[in-house]
Amino acid sequence: MTTGVTTSAKPKVVVTGIGAAAPNGVGTHDYWSATRVGRNAIGRVTRFDPTPYPARLAGEITGFTAADHLPSRLLPQTDRMTRIALAAADWALTDAKADPASFDAYEMGVITASSSGGFEFGQNELRKLWSMGSQHVSAYQSFAWFYAVNSGQISIRNGMKGPSGVVVSDQAGGLDALAQARRQIRKGTPLILSGSIDAPICPWGWVAQLAGGRLSTVEDPERAFVPFDPDAAGHVPGEGGAILVMEDAERAVERGARAYGELAGYGATFDPAPGSGREPGLRRAAELAMADAGVAADEVDVVFADAAGVPELDRVEAEVITGLFGPRGVPVTAPKTMIGRLCSGAAPLDVATALLAIEEGLIPPTTNTSPDPGLGLDLVLHQPRPASVRTALVLARGHGGFNSAVVVRGTD
Amino acid sequence: MTELTLDGLITIMRECAGEDEAVDLDGGVEDTPFDELGYDSLALMEAASRVGRDYGVDLPEDALGRVRTPGEFLTLVNDRLAAVTAAGGAL
Image (cartoon, rainbow over all chains, first blue to last red; front, side, top):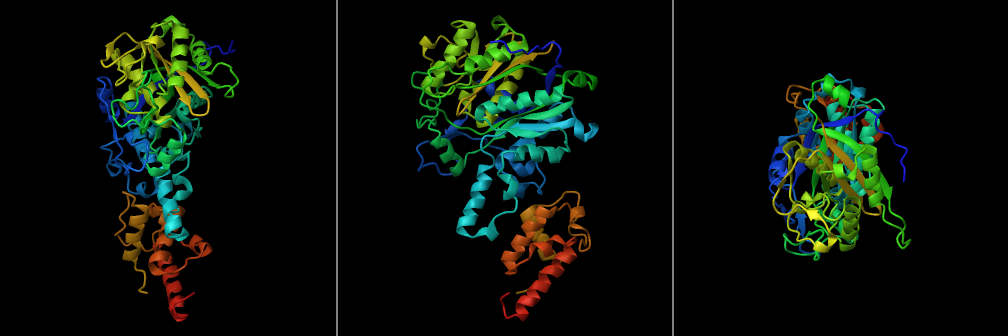
């Protein structure tokens, strides 16, 4: 399939700042320190009593105190995911040495992804509605639950009035948002904050995810989320993600910014209807992203897998990877085995992780899994693997048939 | 029901809408517009809802929409309270 996309004439878009927040590390430094050595952070849910539910494990962020990072005006009007997103946006801007005051307001935008919105905030207000009456419902419920609220609050806090929005396509949305940011930068907006933070670990968010039918009910934290393993039985949900500062490469150079790397390619597809017998769309998404980046299979140094942890989906992904790169033809990793699947936060965090892997020359490991050798994957297991990494392929699938892929490439 | 005082209103604003770091709410703010105090219309709605529950007084949205300062807010609330009292406790 030809894409009609030529990359040479299009302006480069680079990542100049990373704000990561994950169950095994809050802040980019702590996150990478934990992830590069494979530190697990899956445990029993503590944010509510999970006893009555069939799934009881999660990757929870601990040690994030919103009042330490945000003004008190923002606390009554924000869900947990928004508080973490606002802090991550601050960290990303600091990392990029990008002071919003030095840009025109219309030169900066915010494009995030979201899976569920502010479920914990919404649940609390619905509880007040039905137990105490409508006069007890917060006026802030009008927007605090909403999918677009992280984009809106980041935009307001930092005075960013350029192109902004939200993408909702589950895990794939995390990559779709980065692609939309790249699109807007190429149309002339120099800087966009993008990525996603999700945090639906509350009873409402929990039952919504249970309804999806893919949560692992295994009780052992080291065996509950084991993608590509013969014992794979679903995934453990987590919270967090990453906010990235994305910039036009030339403008970034002009202001003296350092770039982690380039968002070089993107592809997105939708699966055919169930039962059609046609091939799932993941391979085509990866091919489109590689064609967009102008990279051949032998130039890809590592693949960050979607790693669904559902046998059929794992098999599909393994076939895509071995089909493109050959059996054991490329190192594959899934650091999300340490922290669970973070809804739309997962893929931006994988992109951040890929950039940090490029920077250090180290592929972080996949933990807990003992992969089926028949799948033919060269999975980086248990220990990090030193490697010269210049180009990474990141895959993400969203519930309901979304497939997205990006290629990130280190800058010279 | 006792009158709503400036201190009482400030306490409610702090609890339900937080406080702008750049503003001293204890510095005699009766006639300072809410927007200069860092409070937008939603913060005011949130406070009005809380005052309504705590003081048993209903604050009509159109009247609330005309309120610009804490002093005007107090006048609105306390006039309503007085009317409730005069009407024998229900309005």
